[in-house]
Length: 171
Image (cartoon, rainbow, N blue to C red; front, side):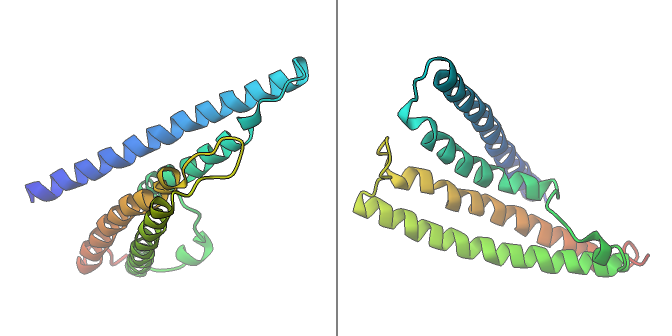
């Protein structure tokens, strides 16, 4: 039991750490875009990488914050359907959707790793103003889905336990 609590604490710590990296990227993206606007309109000068770096940052923000949004249960839901179910059926539906999320994350981790390894072997680079290697940037995706996989696993176990407790979900 103690190991389970420690594992959940580590998972929560990793998710929060990735969220804060995403928050720093949002701040950096805002500063870069603002600097680009100021230099273009006031100094009539455009910096080459002003568009592509925020694109990479946006990619990172989306994937790094994914597990945090899942942890906070802040994804879009169709409440009109779920709200009409009994609590027991709501828990069952949450178990099923979390199980599907778990499977999808597992598949995306696998194919993400395959894609990153392929880019490492071919020494692929982005063909923009700054020729950055693709692999380190693309590695964010399988990392993100691996963390989300464990978050979904945690939710699947919680929903299974809740669904098995007949008294707590018989509303």
